[in-house]
Each structure stands twice: as structure tokens, then as C-alpha cells.
Length: 590
Ligand SMILES: Cc1ncc(COP(=O)(O)O)c(C=O)c1O
Image (cartoon, rainbow, N blue to C red):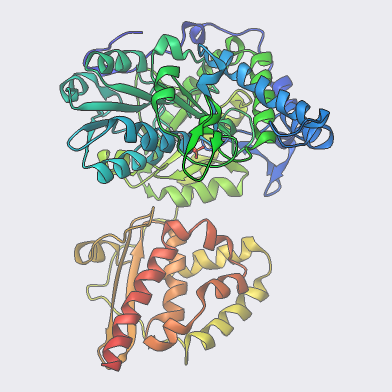
């Protein structure tokens, strides 16, 4: 592992550079039933492996077999079935210990996932070792799961969070990190691979420097374990966390590795069954590791499924799929790099199979790009990837992210590249702003309910969801473009992944009514704005507050916007409009 200048990234294990003549991607694909399905009538192209991986038949079958033939609670029954379940559960712990090269199986704690693992450490190690004016170091690349638990701890005990900065390529600045370390540093929590940029961090060097300063180290391995061999003793970290579902295993199960002496010194995280040695009303003594940290009935099927996932990964062999994934990354970097107006965000020297990008010329919102890709069967992630501080560092709200795994192909990269070219060339030119004065729309009907009835009739007539989505986009196309003006007048609406600006006010001619204007950088969000304007602008505040928006979106068959888009603007816009209505209604009463 090498220091590169003042940055810290690390070369993937050297085998990644070798060619892999023996790797048969089609054979691997045949192991994953979902890969032969379609999406919107097109072959599924699944490029959201950073969010979760698909599951091979071996994992699905293993979970089924567990429920069909082995299901019982563990550590509790004297009967054969319970012993079988217990054996499967405990044997998987041994398997995981070998998989990440832990010294002992009792250093492996089952948790729900990376997030719970970090929370456990922040809470329990925090109680043991972090106090007032101590410092916790995280990096600018961290997922919210590796920021918020530390922030909560810091707030609770009066400690301080320090942040390792990144350079423009997305590499951590190791010299800055060294300067941050001090006798006050109690723990350094850093990601092994950035989920948003793909940067591979030199966690071994980060650990060495932390230990020299007397601090402990937690490595977030969520984006590493499925792609490269893990060796916690080589890294010499104190804690390592990962999620089963990003490693071809089931959701709801993950792993916290901790060095034994440290885990033994730490207080339990949750109390309950299985984590005790004896209980009286006066006093409880705790079970030894690992049970001390595993209160309650665990996700036994999840553990068994994770064990099958590890077997599967090892049967394919890191030495075979690592070069394949690396080659996909290089090919995708080249193909996407050829698209004019596309900028790759995150260009570290050493990267895992993650490509984040934005389309800048013409500017296309990441949400629109993601939805357009979805229409041709391509699954990517759009948004801030739970890394808002990192997005802020690059002055962007979000990216489109494609993440590769062992079953992806060059043909899928080609499909992504051609779809992006098509999206780019067919992008509607942005309307030039002709308005100089902003016009607040008056009521589109007698009440929100009356307008809702008309809209419901229209959407019923349209039929399928594609036609309904198109209608929403058409509404958006007719929305007056106030983006640049509103940007100067209003703060960006928080809670939206797209850039949304909204101004609401009491209607000048009737103080009981609310009117509003808004604009956004995403076409679909502009459609939502146009819809909300029809429903609410110019209506009586009391009627706005009484209107059931969730019911309306279900009624018009756009309920996917309630889940998918809520975070992309709709929910925040509704909250903002309702807040204005509450103020207006309050004034009316007083
Ligand atoms: C780097 C990183 N850390 C933490 C997490 C959180 O993982 P989980 O939601 O499985 O707990 C993720 C998930 O995307 C991640 O990519």
C-alpha cells in the first residue's frame, strides 16, 4: 500500500490488474434469476450494485431450505431442530471470521447492517472512551451512516467532529489527516471505498497513523467486501463493518468485527435475551462475546443466507471477478468520458467499480436522467447517495451513479452509454426566460377538491403509468421558467435532491388565500410543481390544509411519486405550501 503524494488512496490488490481469461460472465449471470427479467419491457440492466446487489440462486435456495427444513430459535432448544439452526448460525460466524481474516469467531458480531454496526460502536465504544472535548475524525467521503452516529455521540458527550478533506479527484488528504490527529482523538471512522465516488482509501495507513496518535479506527467496508478480499488484521483496524445485502446476501443482516479486547471492554449496546449470563432484579451479568452484543432473536435466516453468499463469492473467486470489474470500470470511464457535456465526479487514481457523473451541457437534472434511463430498463442511482457533505464539497446537489459488480457486462456499459447519448441529444432545450415579472397563479377551480376531481378524470382517461408520467412532464413543460429569478429571491428548498425554489404568499386581493410560484432544475419536479399549482395556488388556506395530498396522488395513479419523489422535492414543496397556509389561516383567526 502506497502513499501517493499528500493523498491517500490505495491500489486494489495487484491481481486486479491481471487479465482474467477464465472469467465467464454469462455463466455467473445464469446464477442470478433476476438478471433474466425485464424492466419496462426491456432486458434489465442493473447498475445499482452500490445500493444493493442481486442474489444468486444459491443464496435464495439456502434461505428457502432453512425455512423448509431447519427453522427453530437458536441457543434455546434442546431438540434437534434448534441445534441444527444453532449450528448453521454459529458455523457462519466461523466462515465470516475466515472471510475477513479475523483472529477469532467471537470477534464477529451480527448486526442488521453497516449502519447498525456503526451505531453500536458509536454508542458502546463512545460510552467507554469518548468524553467532553475529545475528538472524533471522519472523512469528507463518509456516508451519512458514518457521520450521524458520531455527531449524535459528540452532541451527547460534548466531543467534537473533525473531518479529513478530499482533493478535487476525490482522494483524502493524508497530510491534513495527520495534522488533525492529536491526543484528543479517540476514534477515526473512515470508509474503505467511497460509495459516491468509488475512491479506494488507504485504510492501513490511516490505521497506522491513528494508532500512533493513540486513537482507535473503524473502517466502513460496505462498498469493499463484495469486490476485494478483506484482511482486517492486515489493515489492523479496531472495527470493521459491512452489510450482507451488498455482498450478494440478504437484507437485514450485517457484520461488526471488533478486536476482542476492545469488544470485551465495551458495555452492551442493547439489553434483552441471549446477551445475559444471569439476571436478578438487583443486577444483571452479561454473556461473553459475541452474545453480549446480540440481544434478542437474531435474523437467523439472514445469517444463513449471508453464509451462502460468502460461499458463492468464494466459489466464483475474487481472483476471477476482480479483474473483470476493474476492466468494466475502465471501459465505462472511457465510454462515458466520450459523451460531450458529461463530467465524471470522482477521478481518484485507485477506484472500485463506481462511476458518478453529471450532465452539464446541456444541463440535465440527475433525476431526469435517472428516470429516462429507467424507461429503457437501466437501473442507476441518482441523488446525493447519502453523502450530502461530499456533494457540497463539489458544489453539486447530486450525481447519477452506476456501480458494477461481477455480473455486469461490457454490453451493459454500451447500453448505458448509448442511452445517455440519446437522452442528451433529445433533451428539450431550456426555455429562454421572457418573463420579467413573476405571475402568481390564481385558483384553477372552486377548491382543491374540485380541481382534484378534474385532474383525476384526466389521469383516469390517460390509462397507464407511462402516459400519466408523460402528462406530468407536459404540465412541467408549460410551467413558466422562473428558475433564475427565483434562485435570486428565495433560498433553495431543503430536503430536495433537485434544486427547487419556491415563494408562497397570501394573495394580495384576498388574505384568506395562498398563492405560490416555484421552479426546479428537473423536468419531473417541474411537472409536480405545475400539478401542485393547479391544486393549491390561489386557494383558501383552510381548504389547502384540509386537502389529503397522499390520497390524491394515489387517486391519479402517480403514487410512485409519493415514495420515490418525496425526497426529491414533492414532500418538501407540500410542507412549504402547507406552512404558508398555516400562517395565513392563523392570521385569519387572530
Ligand atoms: C459506504 C457506505 N456506508 C454505509 C452504508 C449503509 O449501509 P446499510 O444501509 O446497509 O446499513 C452504505 C450503503 O449504501 C454505504 O455505501
